[in-house]
Amino acid sequence: MTNNNYNRPPLKRTILNVVIIALLLTGAFWLGQYAAKRNLSQAEAGLLRSLTADKPSSLPGFDEKLFKEVWQTVANTFVDKDKVTDDKLFRGVLRGLVEATGDPYSVYMTPEENKEFTTDMSGKFEGIGAEIGLKNDVVTVISPLEGMPAAKAGLKAGDQLIKIDGESTAGLSVTEAVNKIRGPKGTQVKLTVGREGAKEPLEFAIIRDIITIASVKTELTRDNIYIIRVSNFNGDTDALFNQAAADILAKHPKGIILDLRNNPGGYLDSAILMASKWVKDDVVVMERYGDGTTNINKSIGEPSLAQFKTVVLVNRGSASASEIVAGALQDHNLATIIGEKTFGKGSVQVLKDLSNGSAVKITAAKWLTPKGKSIDGQGITPDLIVAEKADSQIDEVKQRALAIIKNGQ
Image (cartoon, rainbow, N blue to C red; front, side, top):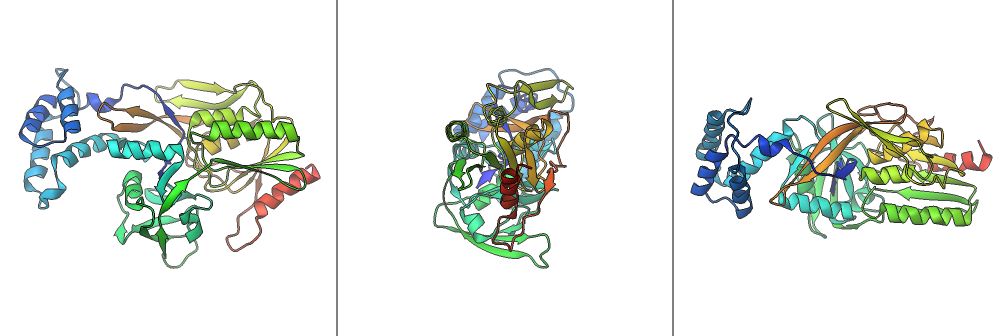
């Protein structure tokens, strides 16, 4: 199970002065005194001590007295004492700071969660093999990964997760939902799902497995059409896609089908490098920051694949980095986009690793297509809309793409 957000949402590791540390400084002395009286973990206690190193005289909006009152009320009064350990309270403070943005893609990750996230991005983990995110405040399947337990069980992009092992998902963050679904190989998780068109919730019992994903797979058809299936933009994507591009140049096919269906995204840089195989010395994607400034990301290197007729396949499970590639090729008239309207995740997250091994993943910008279009919450509308039919044994979207290339349309 991976977190999209991903979002596994477009992601760049960068160095930021994250506000999470500054917001706690005013209350640092009291927190340090409190930590001395309680048994915080070494990691959390160390982070608390670091907060006392610098104490600004004032911080607008921070009420130290009120903060202390709430902490002590929860710690001393809540009925289930085992659920309000000092570790949990402190981590709750950190989560709350990030969640105050109201953005489902901005999250605080504990050291354990950060480690899992890094593992996920490497392309190997234990779970059911599905990308989830929040859509309209509901935990939603962005895309089940091809050939993985979730897809084999019948989960589909757009399915809403109502319950996990009988417990409601209402109010859960993506990280919390992922943690409940994730588990060791061979164990079972039960999901209650709401699906568009279904009269009643659907029940799925899925056996977890080791999920190993090669993010790029290729096929050369009998008609000499080269198909590239990209499932994620992960750590192995650049190398695998470069190999595919070299193979295309060697075999010189009639055309290319770039299949980005159910691709939930990943690294922004990988999306830029992929689009650069078609876009020549021009804009791939623009990032617009909160202060109004814009960063323009142009193509890199030679557009070695621009000479080939290209069709890009998308659906409602195509999100984030895959939308960047589709949007760039559509805006520059370098490919025909066919399939269903995409997911609509038009934001960029940065990852800030913190001193105790935890991390903050936070939305730092909105991204725009080369023509300046924002797709956030809207998605990309294909040039040719072809709906996927769940009960069909024929991949109609793929067949339409093959016909476009064969007939030279």
